[in-house]
Length: 139
Image (cartoon, one colour):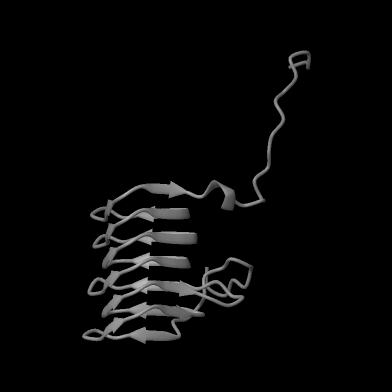
């Protein structure tokens, strides 16, 4: 997991922090890693060539659309979540809105009030299609 430099790999560090007690009203664009411990009222999106990672701590409160490659949630989100790579909902996560993901991990206690949509179009090209065995092949 760490030290993995493959495309689509999770970033190794958190570059920016929105601390507890901080309230931001407006949209946020970031590259690398962002951790939110405070409150954000606006949309959040990762930009740049490298996959972005967003961590929403158990004390965080976000109201807006999220579009990030890797999202880890242990706080509250009100709005849709689009995780193009992975979505990790930890035990205190509470999401009110639809979630779109490629890979999903949910711990006991996490709550989603909305639709869960697996983005099949984003599935890996590493999946190997197997040919069925022909009926006349010998066993």
